[in-house]
Length: 419
Picture 1 (tube, rainbow, N blue to C red):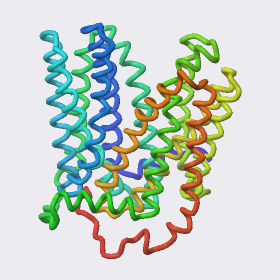
Picture 2 (picture 1 turned 135 degrees about the vertical axis):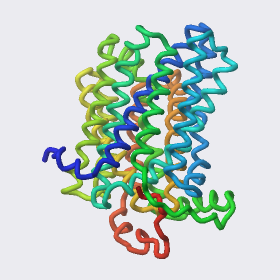
Picture 3 (picture 1 turned 120 degrees about the vertical axis):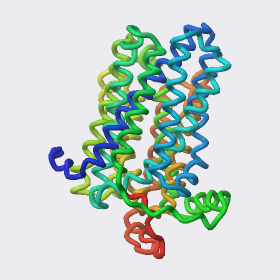
Picture 4 (picture 1 turned 90 degrees about the vertical axis):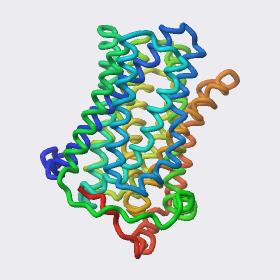
């Protein structure tokens, strides 16, 4: 059943304002990533410096283990505005500095680290307020649309970024990234304008107590513990495809750059289709069924790809993998939002984002270490097997989620973050 786009407009202008604003911000993020690495490479001609800055883009993700607690201790909309205003200033400063003179590496890296660190406060706050924009029965559809827009924005950012950088240079793309943060701030203020809110009560616990409470919830709650583990396994299974796809295209398939680019397009296009396809699937099957089914398709696709080194098979399997990954990603996110108490959603979301975004570079590092000793066929196949581990972990979701003592959390009240 095709998605009826007209029906999604009933979500309201606040939902669409946040989704479109963050889609534009995501385009700016991809502009910045392209511009930053290219700028460093041209300025230093040193691959070690390039690796240092690339690492700086990923390390701050670990701050998400703590930033989610901040999101739970203050108004999340206010935190989002502060975070993107700060990122607007930092990104704009980098652009102006780059336009006026050469930016030394010792000045560039700290600003990049600060920019990425501030972003870790925005993400869990956004994840926590998202359920307040739509009705509970529409949450899966809303998440699927949001994830599709994010992936589409990434494709657009990568597609147009190189073209714009060739015309105007890296500092201009950094400036466009700053503009995207400014647009994000405007849309968030627009969404939240004129709303009468009750200031949050002073936290009864210390920051450390709230932080430990978030970890304790994930560790002791059987569903959340499984969901976080599934998300980590899904990212680990994706790591070989992300880090060694060029080697697969060149050394195994014996193809050129055009086919290598087509491989990436197949997977990213599949993810968009999977995100949009979640809505009609939810009408027929529950999320608890879609998660293990999607993980099984992911694992089967990668194993089949590894065993049949033909470009047509690779392209088809990557498309199937992307479709299944898009479904699993949106479904897991929806289950986390439905299972977690609203007052702790920032902590759980921040931890989830930190662990999953850290799993991808870890998986890439392991794949890089193994590739000189093990053939790519077995590395890719091993990544596929990890997805089947997620299938095992997802068994029993339906029975556990049907237990009201698990899902309702008696006595927990919703935070006053609704617009």
